[in-house]
Length: 93
Image: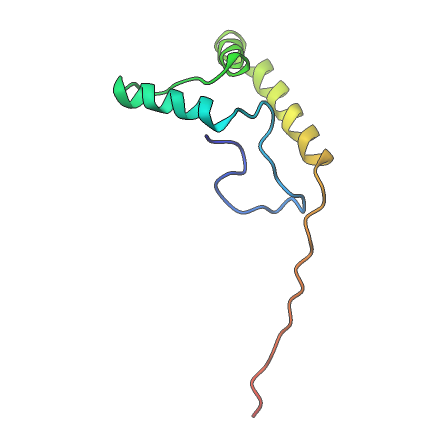
């Protein structure tokens, strides 16, 4: 499953988590098996994803603004990421 932030670096300073809804692995696996048996370009898992896809087909700008607002809300509610402690060592002459 792809979600924003799943591929790439995290420069937000927050612990990223997938935005809701998050599905049970078995439910996703069942859909993947169905797609493997009957290949197609994509598949939708769950009612909310279907409704989001439908809403985007009807009103893309509004749907994109709502998705961005949801992701921003999830980001600001996320826990801060731990700050790495970096110790620099230089070779002695």
